[in-house]
Image 1: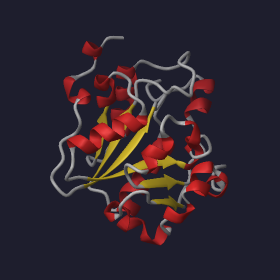
Image 2: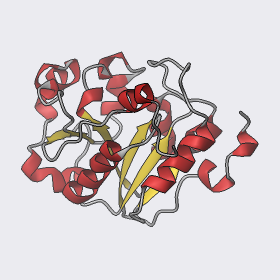
Image 3: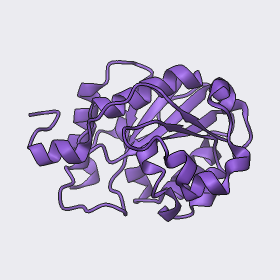
Image 4: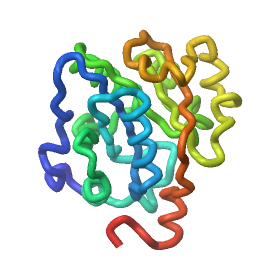
Length: 210
């Protein structure tokens, strides 16, 4: 797969205006599904976001590439799934040469000094978050919102990240103020949960474009 197969608009960061609150929701989205969309919608509503960047990553170093659909296909499936114009599908990480999340966030911060970003993750990612490259740097770059996922509700109590940064936890009743806070700052948001998973969808042989 070559970079030329991806539309130019997907290789650039979405347009933003000074002072906006923007959520960063990254993943392989292999394939994207209603569970991902539910996380994005909860984040938009509870965090008071102006935009959410649906960041389709080239790959995940903690996961096998053997079943990874092409980046253009995952972008296309994401755009077919999403209806809310505030959700911007982007693959600008591809243009960065496969940077780790910490490096990507540092780049985003440097390029957008007047935007209030929040990193968004599903609670199922919290278990292994401390295995991510420079994970403590990620926590110190932007505020983080962890959105509940089935079977992962207790992750915010048991994960290394939650224990290490317990002092920086913001009550979810104040989630709407998270974008104003200096990191480290994070919150765990409970809400509706979808049992869908990309792994299960791949195992069933069904994808968003099938």
